[in-house]
Length: 163
Image (cartoon, rainbow, N blue to C red; front, side, top):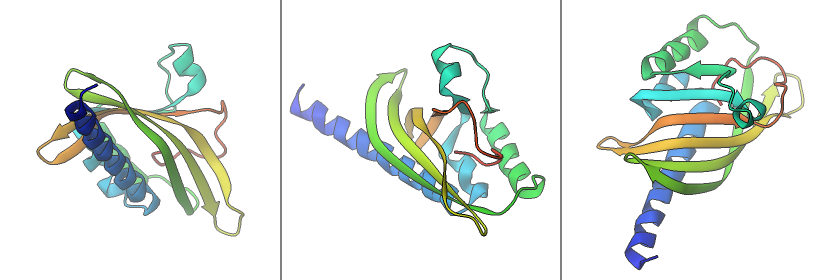
């Protein structure tokens, strides 16, 4: 691989890392109203079990097939959903650019989400892998698609908020 290509790939990887870092910080800081800003207009967001991905089954625990649906989800979380207060903390690692397709960069990263409820110990809420299509726009990098693929076949408690 040529030095220029490696430099470009490193720059794209840095964009992906920055996008994921800002994304999880937004969620951890409970700024759900800003969550849709990480997606372009024709974006897809899904939280889906690894088992379903491996079997090529389309059933997702949470599925939004446009930025409008993502915005509706954010409004519902803030104004309509009732759930116990909680703190989340995301840990993201191993961010990799694994390809490019139709102007989008394909990226993978591991995630772990910890949850702390009032008067309870912190627990692992979910672990898995992000698979994303990232596009570079004039407004910065955005997700065209973000899949949060969780490893366990069970989710502990309520999945009301994005991962």
